[in-house]
Image (cartoon, rainbow, N blue to C red; front, side):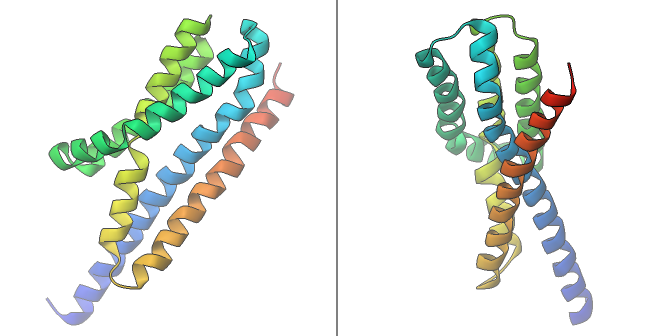
Length: 168
């Protein structure tokens, strides 16, 4: 393989890693901050106390944080792509299930499932970026990856808020 072909392949791999990692980071961080839009709605709909609302947030965040290391181990065993895709689907399914829940118990199950899925993103996607970029370039790439998460934190809750205003 020529040096030019190797450079093209490397750049393609870098772009692919950044696209996948940044896209999942934006979506997962958006899901994580979407809970702040939903908490007052769930509090009102289910007549929850402030303590119960705190339990909802704590369950989601605790599940997500506590299962990141096991998610990394799963990705070593089954492959990063499978675990990351499965986790993303699971996080989305958790929010769909939360929308269908009729009480606190089902909502707790839904948020546990969502947190379980969201646990996959940080360890796997950040590793994809770190492996794809070498040397000092990895710091710049990780900065872009982190920025994508901030975009998700802004857009997903904002879109959900607009939908709540527009939809009955």
